[in-house]
View (cartoon, rainbow, N blue to C red):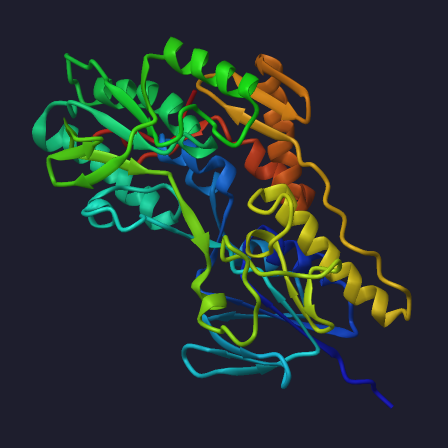
Amino acid sequence: MIQPKLEVVIVGAGFAGLKAARELKKRRDIHVTLISERDEFWYSPTMYRTATGHWRRESCIPLTSIIRKYKNLTFVPAKAKTIDREARQLVTEDGQTFTYDYAILALGVVTSYFGIPGVQELSYNIKTSDGLDRLRTHLHQELTEDGEMDKNYVVIGAGPTGVELAAALKSYLKRIAKMHKIKKSTVHIELIEAAPKVLPVFKERVSRLATKRLKKLGVKLLLGQKVEGETETSLTVSGRSIPTQTVIWTAGVTNNPFFAANPTQFELNEKKKVVVNEFLQVDPHTFVVGDNAATKYSGLALTAVRDGRHAARYIKSTLRHLQPHKHRNILPVSVVPVGGFWAIFVWGWVIFGGKLGALLRIGGDFVGYYDIMGVNNALAIMRKMNEYEETCPTCKSGIIKE
């Protein structure tokens, strides 16, 4: 008698969701349904590089290239709407219903603009593939149509993404200005942060290293400043107007609205993240992982990878009638690039900046790609990481190496 396959539904194709799918891909006794509203995997650590002219596939990787050999997986392009944990059913916005033995919810976070007037409508972002395309098009059109650079390029949010982008933006703008034959190419980059220091979630030494490096690169820091509104030609910051048509928002995020939209199914903490048990579960059949879970190191890519692996291994343990291991909160390594071949390495009290940090970041990116798509795909991406890719007619002249 043929035993029915265990039905596992994974919602979200980010680090946690794809890692769980990869862990389960060789199981003939499991069928995986991967539900995602996008058809790409966004490798967030390199989004700042793609925003500044590098190969798009560093950051935006078609799901088909990752999951095409997963014979036990069905991909469903849809957006999750509701869940009934008692019935073990999940319904998508287009009306499809999926019954599961186990669900792994890894929907990721969404950008929050804190209700600041004009910012959501007018600013640019680098957190989505559409956002990347829109920003890069704007930077090139400005040079093509206006024949000059913006007075100020403003990055809002001095977390890792904002620091990485602000540090890389100046050299990229000078490069494309040269291609557009703009003779006067003075670039003013301003980095705005509401907290009193750069990289506010890190230790003071990390902030000092980043501040010194950013100033050396010519980035103007506006710390302890409140963004109050944006128009098409200016940004208001703590009562002062900054003339600009290029505002890039890298600040706040909030939990995916799916969880708040299902209030009877989840308990949320004060940060709107889902309260989970020691196995990352809200019940014996439903996991909440990655950025959605209220765990110690939630919000980091490496944490999401570990969460996805944990959920998959829990499921495999139950099939083998073994006692699953509890989830462990492990301090992840952080490496923050700050312009050129230079980065800050952070792991507990081990903190240093420089070329060694940049080398370790390259190693970390290889591990990140490998965790999601295996060694061959990881190597294929790493081989092209120093190549530029432009769609601007003026700049497009094939792929240009750094």
